[in-house]
Every structure is written in C-alpha cells, then in structure tokens.
Image 1 (cartoon, helix red, strand yellow):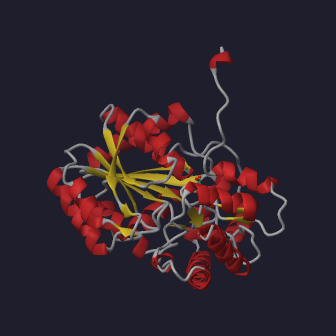
Image 2: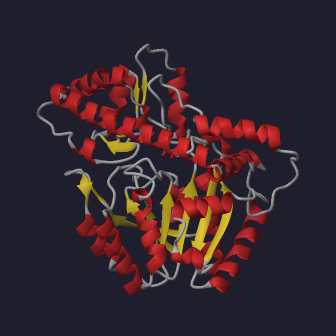
Length: 398
Ligand code: LMR
C-alpha cells in the first residue's frame, strides 16, 4: 500500500528548527520559525499563564469531555478579545464560535465549512502569504488564487495593485486577509485601507476570511483587531480564524478559535451546527488545556491585566529589536536602506536577499531564515544584532 509514497523534504518553516538544533556553531542564530524569545533566548511561559495553570491544577475536578464547542467560558473570552465587548454582531447573536486546535485548526475548519457551503470555492490569498495557507485551504478542496500585496522592491504594501486585483473578485469568492503583523512581510493595512477593502467586499459580495494570529504583537490589542471588528460590523458574512499561540505563548497547547459572522441569528446557528459536525468528523473536539487557560485569564481581572502587561512588554521588545537591527544594518551595509524593518510590525520582515544569499548566511554564519529571506525578528537578541548585520554585509558584498 505505502510503497508508492515517496520521501518528502522537511516542512520549509518547521524544518529549519531541526537543522538549527543540529548546528554546533557557537554563534548560531535562529530567525526561522515564528516563536517569540525573550532576552535569554527562551520562549517563556507567561506569568499569567503559569498562574492560571496553577489555579486549574487546584480547581479542575475532571478530565471528562468538554462541550464540543470548547472549554466553558473560552468562547466568550475569544469573542470579547477579538471583536470587543460591545460589538453589534455579538449583540445580534450572529457570531458562531468554536474552539479549535490552534490557528491552523481554525483555518482548516473554516476551509471545510466553505467547501460544504460552496464546493471548490475560490480563495484569494495575498502574494506573499504564510507558506501553510496553501496546504490548509487547498487540501480541503478550495482553489487558490493570488492578489498582489507587497512591493518587494520598495518594501511597502502595494495597496493600489491589491485593490485593483480585488476589484476583479466575483461575488461568493473568499479573500484571505491578515488581521495584523502580516506573515511573512510585516506590512499591514491602515484603518482607512481596511475601510476601503470593506467597501469593496460590500460592493462586490466577496467574503473576507481573516487570519488573526498576532493580536497584540503589532500596535496593540485593540488596534490589531481594527480590521476584523470593522468588517464584522459592516458586512453580512466574515470568517475569523484566531490563534493564541503567540499572544498567550501557548504554541504547543494548540489553542485557537474560529468565529463565523453570519447574516443573522438563525444563519449563525446553522453555521454553528455545521462547524460542530465538521469538527466531529475531523478531530471530535479541541484540546481543552490551552483554551481553559485563556478562559481562566480572561475571567480574572488581575490575571487579565498581568497578561496585557506581559504582552505589551513582548510587543515593545520586538519594536526595540527592529530599531536595533536597522541601526546595525545601516552601519554594516550603508549602501542599502533597511529602514522598512522598523516600519513593519509583528514578528516578520523580509531582508530582501536572494535564496543563494540566504543559503550562504546559513552555511557560513549559521544564521537561519526561510528561503525567501523572511526573518523572525522576535527570535533575535541584542547581542546577536551586530553579528547578523555584519554577516548580511559579508554576504551582500560577495
Ligand atoms: C511561522 O510562520 O513561522 C509560524 O506561524 C509557525 C508555523 O507554524 O509556520
């Protein structure tokens, strides 16, 4: 049976960690997989999460199945976090919500839902987009199209070309957007650009599908949710995939959620029932631990405040690292402008290097990043900034 299956290469992003672990270079730098690291190079368990875990350990009395839509209280937490307390779509009862195994689970569940509603529907993804969007959506049977998003020469959002392409998207197609901290380029829509895309969606009848994996890593918790909140207010249908991997540091717990905003209460109820049925056929129910932590933190004012502060600290650290890297690159490579790195947001930016140059950085300097020169700024450290900048200079200058 399996003799016909060939050996596949490692995943283009996750495979970098394996190569990095094996590398014995004393100065090796991992700018590959998108995980946050603190000044000691550790991906920390947030103190609020630690406290919530201790509380759960004391209070949890059973490991019985959770309800299929997720751990009690976690759906309310995610709705309030993503859409805000007073969002009219929540008041109107038009938001279906289920917990999912991480953001990937949410993306895949949404793709399966779309496939049920409109088999083979077209999903438009930004060029570039996260490498795993293709498999997560395409393997559900959806067909993928691209719209221009990033100007690789000027290192800016190419909004005019994006809008022009979206003007050709027919009614009933899906358009995948990144809520904030675009992965892989770090260039985000401004509030007024969100409004323009919303107006276009309304005029043309395409359905926004928003991937929100970095809420709180860009400008702030409220600011990073501006697009989803606006669209959920003004459009009849919006899909929102949420991940808690980064903002709660719950990577391995696979905590996430899918919110689907429908035209009214009865549509949301139908969607909710469909989501539960899709999930039942895929993995039955999501893991409880991560969403239990999110719910526990959200329900305690003190823990919530502590979590907000820790998140703000992480966001601040990334911004400082962005500035430091720009400064170091300005010294090491004065002929090239890397100022865009400080203007971009979230974990990622492109350095703008060729695949060969990326290969040299890895081979000669043990600096790891994806082939398209995407760096995880949140994986950097102040004591590695000069080393990275000088290595980039060496590679660029032959
Ligand atoms: C990334 O883009 O590096 C992260 O989202 C981790 C992943 O699963 O790819």
